Image (cartoon, rainbow, N blue to C red; front, side):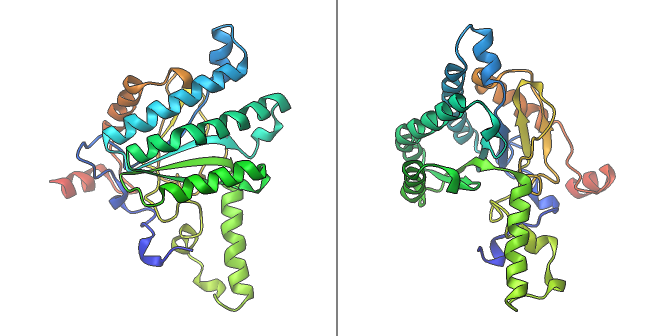
Length: 262
């Protein structure tokens, strides 16, 4: 559990971007969609689309660091993705393991801390060990946090937080009347970090697919047509420009925002 003082106000306007560039979100979330379609467009097997997608992840991590993003969270494997063909799931696990082995030096080079969110108990022992070792190896890095959602679902996340709180009530450590949105916030994944300011879903699919349902209550959404393997720094900067053009009100009126900024 995290200390109360470290949890952000979940609906406060203080969650707005405070980076050097006004159009840079503190926390960027990405639903990486379109690997299979990209492969089909190029006459390739789907696994090669996932490999190209892994390269796009690396490039995006580096581009986000350079832009000044504080937290980058990517949706790598949802709890529903187990329904995909077995050969595709196996290939994804292999690519994931290869990427962990290859990319930790890059994370160190850029002073990036790696975290995972989701139920990792379903993965193989060798993959879990590699994940845990990668987290341990990068835990002292501080320039950016790179969070990878694997076997993750937003409903699972909320239910897991509710279960923990229920156990505290059952043990007499907490009264049910003390459960508040702020307390729930401290028990969901990444509750110690700012909530996402911007969520990008590539390939123009306009849904969030059970991703960070609690955390994205006030997130801005952007749905470009580009497929994930083609996502590059130009596409990232375009997303930032779109984000920077929006007024984030957090329940207030435009006049209140303008008065506060004036």
